[in-house]
Length: 127
Image 1 (cartoon, rainbow, N blue to C red):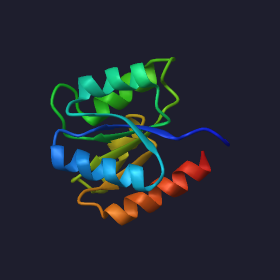
Image 2: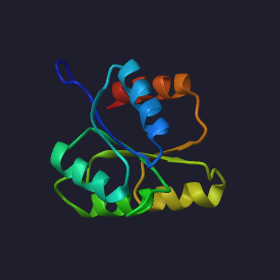
Image 3: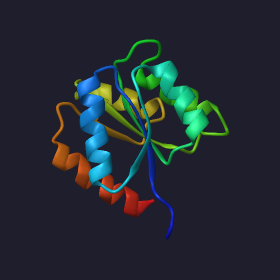
């Protein structure tokens, strides 16, 4: 993986959360390709940028994060992008629904920016 800069698309309808996630991504040494505010824009950004990872809020306008997961998984051109879902709902049913929709990982909100940086750094090395 030498020479490859790990890339990320972020989607969250809360601008403050988008900024916080962007900061964590950059601190982990990854590159933000796009940070968008809704699910439809997330699918378009993933299609056009083809990132290594998409970080998606579950609750967004247009399409929720799980709908984005399903759309990405159904598209052979982008179906292998790794997906991290962010959600305030952390009960087992919500996690299971997220994973069933095609997400690879699930992180609860509120999250610690330090935790996210650590998670991203480990995830980047595991790729």
